[in-house]
Image 1: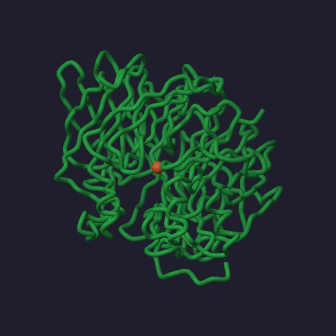
Image 2: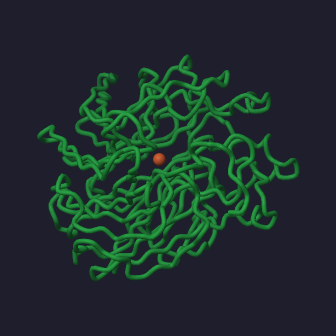
Length: 469
Ligand SMILES: [Fe+2]
């Protein structure tokens, strides 16, 4: 990038964008990559192409996907920007013309572009389902790329059936193969509603419904169990009026209260939703959820308030960090409770995907072990059965960053938790990153293998795994 970036912490250090697309085979390996690991590990995150317009928000960078292809003990690597409509337009212009977070801060002739664009930024997450690799960003359609080369194919709408955006956190049911997902502000910018969609194991969109919400909110993640779908409406509100008046389009507004919409997963109609009130805390990410005889249990990394967003008058909120909580929602009694279940600060929680939506024992997350640093430097493992937690640090938090882990089972028939955690760790002094592979049953021992890059993978959001053939 030849143009200087503005002074913003999310464009510097571990977050700074890279400006090259690599195709590297046979990465140098330390340790031994397990023979049973065969597939692709993807990471996705923001990586601005040009200096942004106005105040940069971490969620507003152009998407770049990184792929580590693993087979026969060897690892190859590819990365590509996702060639969205915005990316291509700005590449042509050789500058940023669009503010993805605020249509009123775009170059005037491109305001309409922001309101009608289907591709978005493709900068948040990815999912492998029904033979397609889809790159996700919650405000727009999924964007299909080639799973090996990462070449852009285009935004994907399930043969015209998907008329809304798609969350970055769809839930894949390991029993049925169904992909369940939602979109907030489904009927238009800042509208108070969510749409629920279901795609069967063959990739056919079978059902879509729209549900009114108490107010217009940014809804990042949701919960799916075998019998319920939960929409948490926390007061991270969206407002067209505020945006038009130069105030924050998205802001923390706790006086609005909070509630969780609970819908029967099978046959649930909009009028069947039940709203269960809770305190106005905030959860970006859920580890898992399951139900048993009308009781719903949900584990998520819970903040006191939404980080990264201001109050409605534009003031920054205090720094806050999340800890793992378990919610219990009793649908018969209509009650809600939340209990902290882990002492570690944590984010990017995941589980063995074969137990998503089901009662489960093992969860994993990224975590810090010191007060200061750009991001998280540790991985954690919680055993819900014994209540114990294990942790592994990749190094000093000030100079070491690790990503959300991904769990890959040792084999399809292996016991829950018998497999590997894959993560990308960055060493800031050398400005390089490596794929780290840990035994999920013994994370304290550190990586069993590392595959080293000669460059840095910028801090991103989410990843996923595509099993090899
Ligand atoms: Fe997320």
